[in-house]
Figure 1 (tube, rainbow, N blue to C red):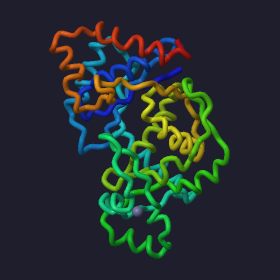
Figure 2 (cartoon, rainbow, N blue to C red):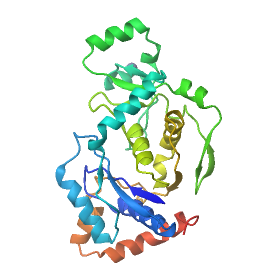
Figure 3 (cartoon, rainbow, N blue to C red):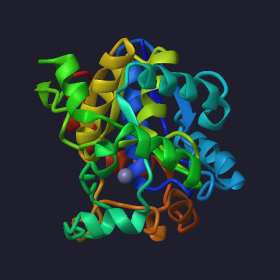
Figure 4 (cartoon, rainbow, N blue to C red):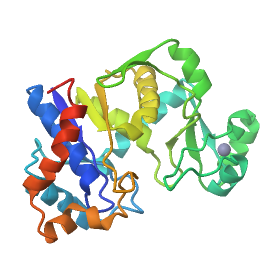
Length: 285
Ligand SMILES: [Zn+2]
């Protein structure tokens, strides 16, 4: 029985991370297993070395423990490439040459709130002929790889995943459209890396914020396509600030470090999270 906490070393942990870490930790305890710590550090433009240690230090301060050496996704690029090759062999991914600007122009959907809403890619490059594709691959400096969502949906047929709060959910392969599985700048993307790592690390229970529920459709689709064992999911509520907005790294005042510097104790933080944990992990605790 294995759970994991998977932060990105792109900033200090805040109260929202503390909840996610505590949820994974508590779940591991309740099911008689252990928690792993995984650094999701593929976005090297935002990662800073100092945050790796800071994350471990903040978790220790909270009393949250994990088993083994924290896993770094940057060490795992070969495995992601292998999965990508596998998907390419069955013709389920295609190269996308669009720039961010071009995609924004194509998807006139307004940005909702302050979080980056996933804009559905219209599939421009999916329609390229083999000749155009080959030409572009030679002359364009970099390209991303996208999932051919329709084709993948047809391949898996009717399938569902289980979430301990949301119940059985039918996988909607088209929910997020043709997501990027390999970014042009780093050669992999979140959706692919997380699915491979959960499988290779034998994670049995994935606990994480409900903002990722839509991503889980993509993850379960990939598990089907790559023949991976699917973990059980539990998507929990997010910690919000006093305005009801979910916390982000810019909420410096609510970083665990700032709270600690202001004299807040780890016990007080865990006490504050307790009702949320009990409510969200009711199916497990
Ligand atoms: Zn494109």
